[in-house]
Structure formats: structure tokens, C-alpha cells
Amino acid sequence: MKKQADRKDGKTAKACRYTNRELSWLQFNERVLEESEDHRVPRYERLKFIAIFQSNLDEFFMVRVGSLFDQAIADKKAVDARTGMTAQQQLRAIYQEVRNLLPRKDTGYHKLMGKLSKEGVQQLTMSSLDPEEYQYLQLYFEREIMPLISPQIIDKRQPFPFLKNKEIYVGVNLASKSGDVRLGIISSSGLFNRLIILPSAENGVKFVLAEDLICFFAEKVFNKHQVLEKTIFRITRNADINVEDSDELEIDFRTAMEELLKKRRRLAPVRLELNSPVSDNLRDYFCQQLTLQPEQVFVDTSPLDLSFAYAMEDMVAKQHPQLFFKPQEPQLSNQVNEQEPMMTQIERKDLLFYYPYHSMDPFLRLLKEAAKDPDVISIKITLYRVAKNSKIVNALIQAAENGKEVGVMVELRARFDEENNIDWSKRL
Image (cartoon, rainbow, N blue to C red):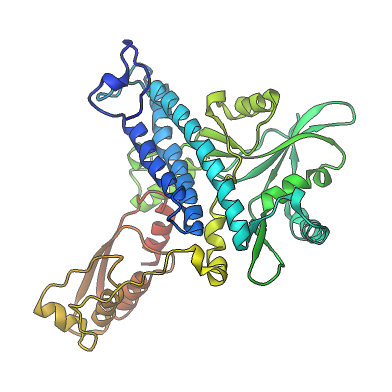
């Protein structure tokens, strides 16, 4: 068990009977990271475990750190009943533990990409390009990216912009001809693909990320200034806001949730991530503009968003299936007779399906049969999280169009699936 932060009374949390909830969660996420370090796990699956570790940490900062951030402001003396730690003590312990984990993540990522490179999956660095690759990427930047970016230079006429949660930016410290030092910011998200796959020989995938390309060619973007230093960065915003805290409780619940989501996008930053160390002046400037403390600034030398691993997963799997676990197809339950209508089978006895190990097909068959069965009057179901193109919801819509009374309880507050669920509730 890891030592926890000192309490006000001089005793350590180690003397407490309980482990702090937040530090315990970080230990859980450490176990996810350990899966990426397990050599028995196929290499691309290990990359995905690093991506899971990162996305878990993102949500942790948005929700749990965001909640503690609010508590630390509202009541500095309040303590956790189980461990006696104040919100501020918990935050400091979290920051320290995260700083212990990030080097492991970065080291693991770079070692793993080195091994994947030998397997034919190669993330190119701008310094390692051959002349043909450099020419291709330079032309790609000039044609596909440069016309779509909107660089900003922060000065008296252009205030520091609003930065979106988890969106990746390139920050460039610039010197004008008069010697003034200003910050230039470029968003790397939006109208162009983040993942850039290079034309390469068969049986291989070479790629670069758009933010690396923008950062490398920053001199072309700010060609009237001298580039002093540059970094890739993103912020994480507090997302811990509840519908009970909303002023919109008198209106329709779905409308209240929509208003809540708009508010959440503009909550205070709780973390700044940089992909490389920067000068103290630039770090302090970021902290001042974002109302952050230096302890809330973290340096990651691996990509700040590893979701690209999923974007190219199918492409890599076709060429290098040995880098993945063998696909496990959901099995049809041996209790189900494929030749007999599902309605008849469940009238005879209850059927229990265990997902994701059992196939969803029998359940979908049941909904489709119910949609057409003249003896069916109504269908009632509860949905928590559903896919963006849900076969279940489509079957329910078909039933409603066939005149059935369809009642669906949709959990609009499913964390970070709210917008998707709101969209489905409107369609239903």
C-alpha cells in the first residue's frame, strides 16, 4: 500500500484505517498501465492499454479532480471522513502520484513504438524522415493543413483565446522584429485529419500526427516572427457538474441537460499538459492565463491523445494480425433455437444472456418479431449507453412506426454519453 499525504494533525494517512478513494483509483489505473508492460500481451494491444490508461486519467481529472478542485475552493477546512485529508491535500497527493506514473507511461510508449516499428508500424519523427518522406509531408502541410488553420498571436488586440477541453494546440513563443515576445497559438483539431498515413511499401504503416507536423512547420505559419520555443499542449477542464446544480430545473429535463452540457464546456481548467519542457516564463504565462498553479502542469513526452491507436487499428490488423489478441466472436446461447421464433421460446421459459460473451442477435430478433407481431401492444425498455448507430434503437423506432406503444427510459446523465443519449431520445 502506498504512503499517502500528511494530515494536519501530523499523522499520516497510512495510520488511517482506509485508503483514500482517489489514490486508490490511481492504483487501479496503474494496473491498467501494467497491462501495457506485460510482454505476454500482443504489442498493439499493449498500445491500446496505454491509450486506455490515458483516457481513464482524462476522465479522472475532469470528474474527480474537478470535484476536489471545487471543494478546495468552497471549504478549505473540510476533510475526508475516512482519511482525514482536506481536498487540497488530496489534490497534492494526486498530482504527485500522477507525476510518478507519467514517466512509466512515456517510457513504455516509446519502447513499444520502437518494437512496433520493427513490425512495420512506424510513427515517424520529423528528424528521421528520408528526402521523399519530407517532401511528401511538406507538400501535405502546405496543401491540406496550412489553408485550414487559424493562427493567433496574443497581444493587446487579440486576447488569450478560449481553449476547448482536451483539444490539442501548438504554442509558439515568438519574437517580433522590435524584440517583443508574444505567444502564438494554433489549434490542430477540426477540419483536417489528425492521423496522416504516408504512402509506404506493402505490409507496413508509417504515420505522423498533425500536431507534430504543425509544430515542425511553425516557422512557415509565423514567417514574420522569430520562433523562440514551441510546444504541443492541451488543457483538461472540470466536468463535475450535476443537473441538481442547474438553474433550469423548472424546464424539461432534456432541455436542462442540454443547457448543462453547454455550461460544462466552459468550466475552469484543472490540468495543463505539455509534450515537452518549456521555459519558466512560458509555463508561468500559461498558468496566469488559465488560472492554474505550476503543480497542475504536467509534461508528457508521448502524444497527448492516443486515440489515434483506434483510428488505425483495422488497417494494422489486416497487415499484422499477430499484434492483436485473436478475435473472440460472441457465441449463440445453446438455449436458443435459431429455427424457432424468439417470442415462442420466451413464452415457454426465461432465457438469460451474458454479454458480451453471448450474441445480441437473439435479443434483436425478439425486438423485430415484437415490432411485427399483431398480439404485441407495447414494448418497454431501459437504455443506459447505446452505440451511435444502434440496432436496438432502430428496432424500437420500427416498432413505433408499426403502431406499437414503445416506452423507453433513456439515462440522459450517462457520464460523457449525455449528448449521444439526448440525440437518441429526440429520435425516439
